Image (spheres, rainbow, N blue to C red):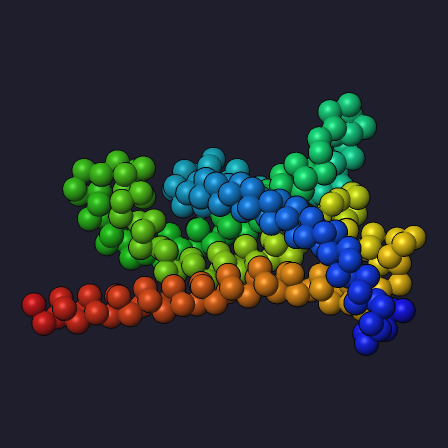
Length: 236
């Protein structure tokens, strides 16, 4: 029944399609809130890393190094089970959002840091000479210019975060991978391995591929806009 061309196996997938839709919804929901958390953390620690203040840079460095050099599975298990055994348990989805957000936030921080440092120092000096305060300088002058620089790696991190939702399986999550496994091993649905995992993979592809295409299209648009602007400035 587990064969790729088994009609019965594909019928099982269709009959229990709500299982895959629920898993997809939980994966999208977890990813959305984790991405928001990752972006916030990325901006905060990215700005700390480029602030020029030793204490802030040290705090940012410690966060990035600790998170990047420990497995996401370990972080997810520690967050969920440590809180559960301490009497402060949280839901699986909430644990996934926090674990994935904190993990990806460390990589986002490096993305923002590299984007900010890629801006010529003259831009910082010009903003300073115009009386911009630090937050205003970053918000109005520096961060908008980093957009085309950080876009490709930032989207790559978003795509990786979506795929990393599969880590919720280790804590009994209700994500797409977890529910797919429950489906292929269930008493009434077990055995449809190939169709089940193919459908699960297609669901991930449907989410991740458009994101990658959107990022590349947007990046190309920004580059074309910059080229047109440069040409217009030269002609003027």
